[in-house]
Image (cartoon, rainbow, N blue to C red; front, top):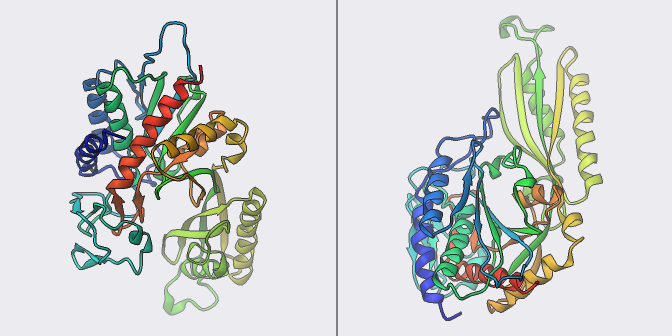
Length: 417
């Protein structure tokens, strides 16, 4: 695309501004969405920037759902399907997102990238770097995550919108822009109403490597296990103490080691304990379950109850309470009902000079929830890598191609009159 330099400048300006805004969500705040006040800082900024682009139809409601409409410029009598573009404003609570200091490594030479604070990004540990010789690589200084998940997606959408405003003769149908909070907690769409949208389909801009198209994700559930013991002074504990901490430890030891995140890849699912707290009297364990096959996810849910009963048998008088909740479902069933959704996306990627690669998400997006609501929503690459960690990095060249893909996608859908 002849505007690559312009797109790159726009992307860098926006992305570097967005990542400096702390938007970490809080999985422990179950009372409100957004779960953190800081997410409003980016939502309000995006609302202002959308207005500056001349977009008039904008709503931002009390739950932090920002929806804007790029109105069609097609000729009178021509009507293309409405499509949506979605990205989330929050960053993962797994790593600090406060005071992010982005660093640019230009003309990357495939060597180690020194982040700072004693941390080094090494190609031997993260081989995806090896396909980015000569690229500009953006990282943090090692004290925080970068925030490419999903501020890269936000910057790419905003850059595509700015391109259309700078190229008023470029035809496009109506496009709905949706920025959401709390995607990282799995609760971001809990109060979302699909009737707010007119879109035939939507696309989350929340992927990773160049050219990747993701139409399939995990089935997901969360779990919370409570262990109730009986506390008494350790000096007189014989026959009386029921140690809730030991109960939690025994439960953890029963989780299959070969079904953990660190032992699985591709289409294999897992149990993943995420946090634990407690004392002799009561302990609590939280975690997640994942699998592409819904029957396998159900097996794991049932296994948690079995493990709980085994712990109760080992600690007579102790009580184990197992609670699980559905988080999202594999979106392939819904996306596969409309072949055009992927077909046009693949053509948009190809038109950007990139080979489309069908992939699976070992995770989920807001798109999985939206697909369940009846709006098929696959995921598009952004150029971000190593999400949720201090080793997170983003490829500027891939970000440019992602924006080009979005521009192509909008234009291709405008021809489906």
